[in-house]
Amino acid sequence: MLIRRAHLLDGRLVDIRCGRRIQEVAPRLDPRPGEAVLDADHGTLIPGLHDHHVHLRSAAAALASIKVGPGEVRNRDGLRQALARASVGADGWIRAVSYHETVAGPLDRVVLDAVSPAVPVRVQHRSGVLWTLNSAGLAAVGLPGHPDGRLRSADPSWTHALQRSQAGLVEISRRLAAFGVTGVTDATPDLGADDLVDFAEAHRHGELLQRTHILAPAKRILHDDDLDLDALTTWIADRHAQGGIVALHCVTAMQLIVTISALRAAGPVPGDRIEHAAVVPDDCLADLAELGVTVVTQPNFVAERGDQYLTDVPACDHDQLWRVATLRGARIPVALSTDMPFGEADPWAVMRAAVHRSTGTGRPLGISERIDAATALTLFLGSAEDPNTPREVVAGARADLCLLAAEPSEVLAGLDAELVAATVIDGTMVYEKP
Image 1 (cartoon, rainbow, N blue to C red):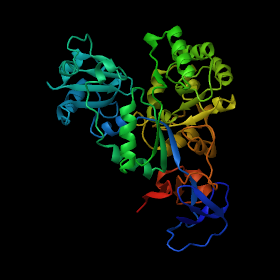
Image 2 (tube, rainbow, N blue to C red):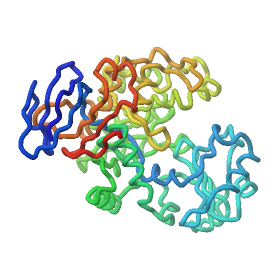
Image 3 (cartoon, rainbow, N blue to C red):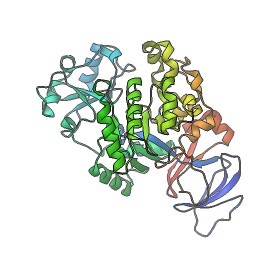
Image 4 (cartoon, rainbow, N blue to C red):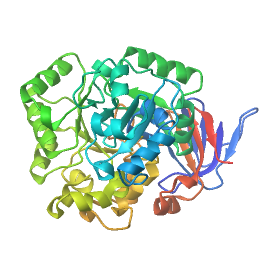
């Protein structure tokens, strides 16, 4: 393929010849016989975006799930009506997502039995780490006597009983291609060898277009009610001894503090990651910088959930939420992601949230954490192997590319997915805007 008349982010106007890798970048290249030509028409060509923290199977399953979050359901009666209207899936379950306590208070099997049909029902908290099952659902996974029906997402004692399906993966992959995403890191903690094979087969058959990197078994979710510093330190040391990294899910200050202590005791290695870092107290900044861990965070939640934060989180702690500018200022490596499907899948919306720091109703939240548009974009240009080094459109690089229908200044001014005109993976066009 020959891509002609494309601006790079530095403003140069060039032609780019590529196979599976970029072969030439020059002010002008002549087409070769039989070579496909794409006229960029002075648009901007960038490396394809890499979303550094997603959950592919959950995103695919969410397509067939009902949303019961604060935006869709207002009270317990509304939850009852939503579940009554829901369709039972091919696996015999009603699957609901995005629940938050503001809908109908804390959810357990008793409450869910009172509002759900007499079929297996499971409701996921919007944090993604907790499911609530009704009595029929608990019986279906072999836990009929469970006291409250509240089960952790990555617990194999019950998740093994659920059917895993590839349904929806094609649609999710096509949506990502339309956003200019050419690679993802799946951060689901309980993926195994069979999942690696499934994703590889899906990629081979063209169902999964993006390069897919899996964090498991490096990923570990922490819970405030089950923090064991010694056990975590031992797990980290064992992972490192096996030549692996660790990726630790930290959404509270307590989880982050224990993680820092465990990493310090075990000793960090290059590539270790903190996932989310939703709350970062000032006292943790020097420790994170010294450890050299990469923080993979999601400022999109400022836009998606910020109005709830303004209600639930004390004002004195607002500046600690979803930090980006302060982390970078402390020389802590940072990469951005969507956390799809727990966050919306659009990485351009994440960039805008990092730049503007506005809630859904337009109120500011943590404006000291704002970054400029060019920085926000580069935080999606790292690779799975090296999230901290932005890739460039240069000879020898993989031909994973995103063409935007605007010059660089307009791209940075808007950070809008509507500008994505074409996406190329491995030198092959996988998306072209009609």
